[in-house]
Length: 370
Image 1 (cartoon, one colour):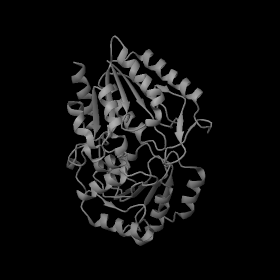
Image 2 (cartoon, rainbow, N blue to C red):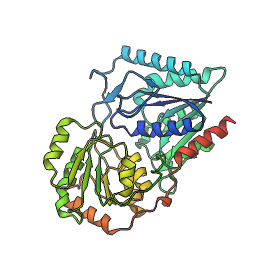
Image 3 (tube, rainbow, N blue to C red):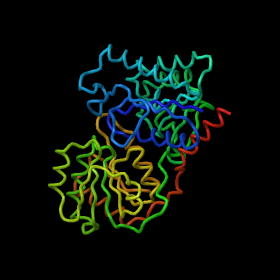
Image 4 (cartoon, one colour):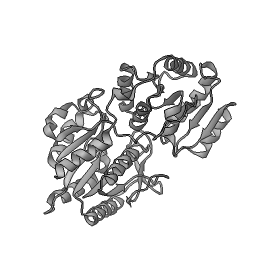
């Protein structure tokens, strides 16, 4: 069985990470997977097809740039749409999976609509599946358009979440109209380390890919002396997208007992034995934190019109699984207070939520093909 998986990351790397986890699960189940990425190449993530990359200038996502930093023009879009179709036809898949669209990535309609139309026209038409996270950027003015596209092109919509925490209706009001197309898979997260090491007592501060997390990291370092964990070792992961200047700035703030690194391949292993995690509230980080069962402080990214991370963090806090500070309220003092609240609280239990989304996604697709 062959799977062609399209993913486009524009600012952070969360979309690519989730797609890579799913691609690995499908490969392990015997699928021949073609992972086609339209974002900037990211060290440590091997893709089958690297399309001419595009990225966003900022959190508004209004302006997209090519690899050389030029705004995308009509010629560039035609060339990339042709490259995507060429890769899709060469793969001749049994399944076409599209990440997020039509519930996001509206900027990529220039290539996704031709791709979906081509797939629907084929004599041996592939199963067409949408792969979407638990919460999307809510936009009621676009709900009718999103629903129409989902019903027109997609056989199934895989929502990678647990409805006990967040139903898809929370950010897409007409979700019920998807009917039997809608399927919850549980959260998609890599398998935990095979053997759990002894607790490290370390505080792990991270910012995902690092594109938008500099203020959180700097505030955490300033908060450290005023927390119950001031004497513990701290490890700060700036992210693969962090600039050298950002790394140097963090090193200047770091005192004794603080280690500054760009990223770690063994992040989940470090998380599993940490005393505390301080992070944003992106999908992957929250899922990994819950999988590890580690005490956590969440500071959701909320620049521009972003609300998805804030809602996810609020829902996690309501279940008693983490502490939270909003970006607007974050100071060294408020963050220190949240750290102490989390330290005094109980460790969250991984069984609180369904974290088996990768395996369940594979099972669902296999059942539909059969």
